[in-house]
Structure formats: C-alpha cells, structure tokens
Image 1 (cartoon, rainbow, N blue to C red):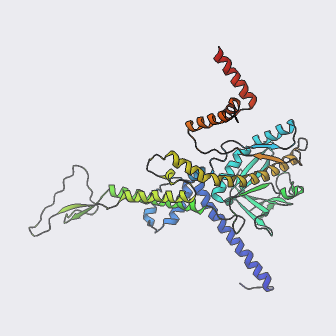
Image 2 (image 1 turned 90 degrees about the horizontal axis):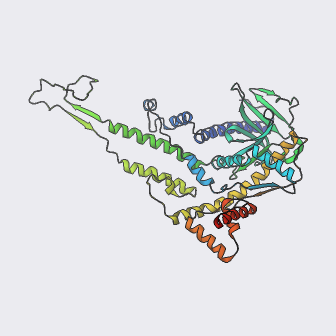
Length: 450
C-alpha cells in the first residue's frame, strides 16, 4: 500500500483501521458468547465443530455426531444473582404528591422496570457490560425497556473510554433486513447497508432528547467490572467451562457408544469383506488344514475408566463454581445432602458480594430512572414527571437461610426483649401494612372468642 500525506495522518489511518478490525473481532466473540447464553443449539454446534475439528474429532466423526449440550450457564448465573431481589425494591419520587406517585408507579409497572433490571443484572454477570435502552413505542403508546447485549451494539467513546459519545444498535425490520440504529448526543439516524436513513417521524435525524444534557442518550449502562476498554472482559470462566463441558460430555458419550457396540476381530475366518452377523447366524468355515491357525472371532473392548472420567468432569464443575464464590456441591452429580451449617457458610460467602452488587445496581437504576423520565416527559408533554424531583430507591434486607425453628426462636426473642409485638411480626411475615396486620389480628381474635 502506498502511503500519502504526512506520517501522522498515515499512522492515524492505520490506527483507525486496527480499531475497526478489533471491533469486528469483538462482535464476533460476543456472538459466540450469546449463542451459549441464549441456548441456541445449532449455533452452539457450529462453534463446537470449529473448536473440535481434528481436536479430538475427525471431519468424518463431526459429520455424524450430535453434540451433547447441558446448559449450566443459567444455573451459575441464577445462583450468583439470587438473594438481591428477594423482594422488589421500593422506588419513590421524592416530595411527589399522591397523583404524581401513582403516575410514576404506573410507568414503572407498565415498563416492567424491576424485571428488566433483573434481566440486565443477570446478563451483565455473563457479558460484563449491557445497555438498558428506554424506548417510546409509538404504536403501543407506552414506554418500554430493551436490554441490549454487546453482540448487538457498538460504541464510540470520547476522552473517557468508559463513557459513550455515540452508540449503534443492531436491529432487524419486519422483512428480516438487518440495520443499525445510531444515537449521538445531537443526532439519531438509521444505517442500512451504506445508506443513512431518517427514522420514522424524524426527517431532520436529530436526537429528540439532546436538551437533556448528560441524559441525552436514552441508555443506561450496567458494567460489573471496569476493563481496558468500554466493554471490559466478559465472564470467560463460565463461558469456557460451558464449552469444555459440552466437548467432554460428547467425547464421553461417543466413547460409551463405541464400547457398547464392540469391535470384532476375525482371525483366519476367510469371511467376505463387509460380512455382518446377527442373532442365530451359523458361519461355516471349511478347508482348514491341520497346520493352520485355528479360526476364531475376538471382541475388542476399550478399557475406559468411566467413573474417573465422570469424576474429573464433576471436579471441573466444582472448581468453576468455587471460583465464582458458589459451593461446588451445587453442581455435583453425587446426590449428597449438604449440611445446614454448610448452607449458611455458602450464603455468608455470597452475602458480601451481593452487597457490592447492590451498590452497583443502585447507581444503574438511578441512571435508568433519569433516562426514563426524560423519554416520558418528551413524549407526554401534558402529563409529566417533575424533572427536579429525586428518586428514592431502597433494597430490602437479604436474610440468609434459616429454618422454621430458627425463625420461631428469633421471633420469641424479639417478643421477650420487646422491640417487636404481634403486629410487627404479622406485618413482616405477610408483607402487609401495619393497618392490615391489625385488622387481621382483630378478626382472628374475634374468631377465637366465638
């Protein structure tokens, strides 16, 4: 390639070219991550064939096998993320009157806010970085939240590589044609092929939320760990373990099948090529001379220690879970009961991690709520949320595993000391208000008197 211009412009071109190639690789990598997360079996088989070609399977073998796939990704992620949303967090618009609070709650309920936050959290544990996109649906006339994973978007950053200046989301229209929806601080347009197209009802291709300042982009990012670029590193631990597990299970299955259907070795049988056997067959061998080796058939059985192979797979499962702060016993194929003490220890190990996640989720939810308010107010000028009000978000306290007997003793202690009464315990157990608890106890006491 012939270089033109000064050395700095040429170096800049080379650098930009490297970035583009790197972004193509990143999208390809996250597509593979997505295939395993979404349990897309056909895509999973494609990636496994590529990984096992001549290592250990030949091309002929790959053309004739179906990969064994047991999804453990969701099991691990659900275990990591459990315990934070045991009850929905309480979200309020500070200093709002009853009508404003009702409107705010209705918006969040229709947008499935809590469910979407949970979805974003689970995906972020796996992908590390996801985006929550607040979208106004003109056809349904309501606000919705889309959770976008890194295989479906790309970003441009400014001086701070953790802050996006522009984001492009990959989508498909009703005809199945793929296009990109591009959002910048002041612009919004679509890209189909090499064509830049104006969105529906936006011929000027401007970002309608550009006046919202730091919330001009209708996206909130949830990032578990900061890395060397915007996306950071996905959870290689879980991904590679899932991939390796599928390969090992398939290899084990193929070996077992070939062992059950033994290989037969015919010695001096003189049978024709391709001749087979079935139950009740009689094979006559004639003209055997006295000095000939005696005709016979032997079966060749592979000497495989299947117990050790399965134990090795089980050990890998436990190793990965322990590295994620989860008890290895939850993945063991041995159906052994875990002691109550062990369960409590497991929960305590996860408790600190969950508290860290709560802080992360709090800031993510605050950002997303600000974005939701911007999108709602723009599209509903007559029924707006106060743009100056703050959001209050309170998580419920996570309680580690306790037995019924332990709970009874805890309540007895509270009654004995006096910092709780029957009303407090009823409200806590039934998750109702104090007034409702009083009414329930009153009806119960009246029924007992009768």
